Length: 184
Image 1 (cartoon, helix red, strand yellow):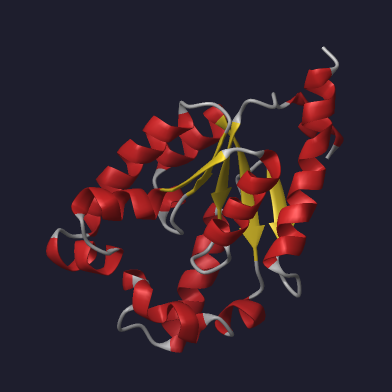
Image 2: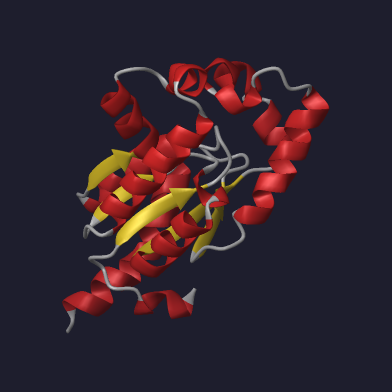
């Protein structure tokens, strides 16, 4: 992590990871800890379309959702000192990966399959990508998506930790940035 000090403290932070890993909850906590604004891209899309993501997928389609997602991520990644949570599928788009990695500090939240599947009952109704999939198909999607989350600046595993513990670990790891930049 010592090379992490090279990131300027005013860079925005983007949280990536599989759906239900805690990007929004942890992102909000880190934003509080760092006194920054928080943006959830899925919530921004829902506000714009005035309907939940599941309805957007049904009525407008995933392609339109992904285009809006890319546009909003590009817009927010150009801003300084904000915390951004992107949807679990956002990093499937090469352009999204590139804009996030070049303009922001990308933090991947990782979780084991065993820990994640314990959350499935709580999240399945709000995740249109999971609709109609068998447990085997969901597991295959989980591991396939993990491959796209390997490109990041920092990674934190959430297994057996509370959201507060993960947020505090992230905040602590970002302290060298503030200290380095404040001394200049």
